[in-house]
Image (cartoon, rainbow, N blue to C red):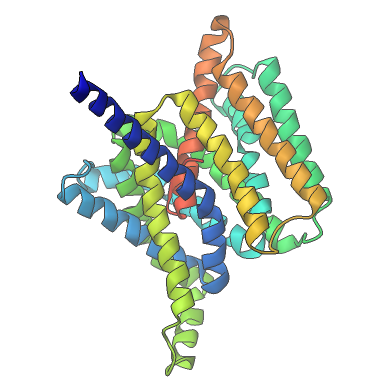
Length: 346
């Protein structure tokens, strides 16, 4: 009897540790990425370092037997390349959004993704229209986002241009990626490995097109005597490590708890991100902007409830909407991770 109780206790603590680890990584990652891009103002190089950390981390953990990922083959890489390219663009626009805007603006636009995904699913994938409750939740999200944008004192054309591009790109990724990954039959870590490795291969092209390589070279040559900055090193390293950690804790927590518990944890993480961002520095929205942000997040909570609690007769629609939400959550893990990840999941 005692061994059984000990086993149950161990399982409880193991599950709790995974959920807490995921919550900490998820709630802190957007703030950490903002900190990293503030100290290291080279988005292309920063994301490349995150891709490298994630791909190398998955490969090493696979070699050590901690996880299993699909082996890299040229045939699968060719088929997966379009999905990786969209993922690459989503991460790049995400990083530039954080570069020019505060974390609150990032969260507002990220929270708007269910609205665009629902429209895209209905328009392009011929899925049923959302239920009434889902439609109301999407309107709440939209209302909160509009209120935030209208009162954002830090509004700049550059920041909101990146926000718009990011929103379009991540919506495209969410609608497109399920078809691609499902057909290829990749497991979760295989998806992470291919996404990050192929994105890493594409990074140099972006450096050349944006001219960032020249900025990095100039900065390197102009600081010949003082090239190592401990603060920058810490910020970049923290971003890369947390990106890999959120992949591990996110996927492990998904397996350890129910879908409802994981969703609730994700919602709490978003609110924690807002609280942490307000507490640690002044890079956040005005009080009214924060109210609009919380309004948008509340719409997201209602949306999740409408997707998971719909009546049986709308099963097919619910299933498709649930898939969209699942893709949203997965991408954010990866994306948040790096910003590399998105694997995604808040």
